[in-house]
Length: 163
Picture: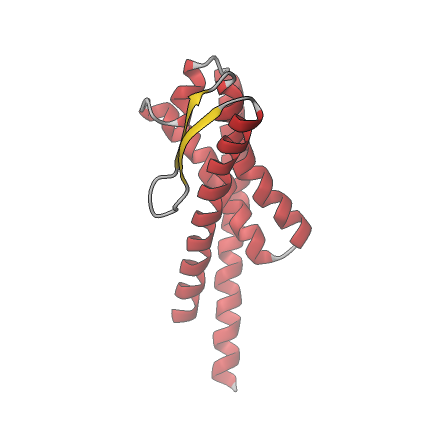
């Protein structure tokens, strides 16, 4: 039981760090590539990461950069590395990014990405499609990844007891 708990805790912590970093760096890279002037950025995962642009000529590109990069980079690494632990992280990122946009839509908080996307003309259909795909695919994969953690840890404990 202890092995499962610490394995899950470690993977969740790593997943959170990867998700917040890739998401926020997506905003930063997209903003800079589209001609924005970065004023400040916060990337520490124990705080709520954010980036602020003084000038942002293409805010939709900057705003979409976060959730798109936040899922594409981890999924690409999972496909390349083909390891269960990387699929755990990628699945977490899929689910978390989709839930973040969906929650932001319902909360209406003016500082969240979804509200800003709508303010700058993003299509509700595009946001809904992103949420359905990432939450749907992310949930199925994340559930499978969690079962893998418990099965792997259970096998390790059984092997230790029988030795």
